[in-house]
Image (cartoon, rainbow, N blue to C red):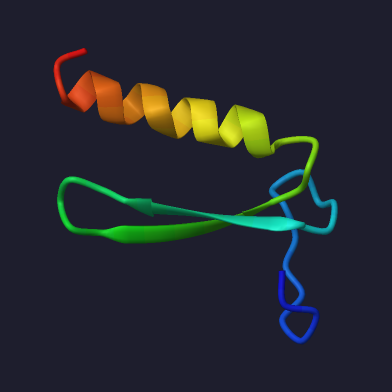
Amino acid sequence: MDPETPCACLCGDPAEFVVETHWFSGRLSRDPVCERHVTEVVEAIRKKQAGRDGG
């Protein structure tokens, strides 16, 4: 994370990571997450993309 641009996770804690996702529609999302939630966010994105891909 860039200390010049502070961000917060949805839980309100300071974000240590930004999860960048390139969606099938061409949309790019950048979600700030704390270390405690990074695995949950990545897994949720993976499931959503797999569902759209028929898996």
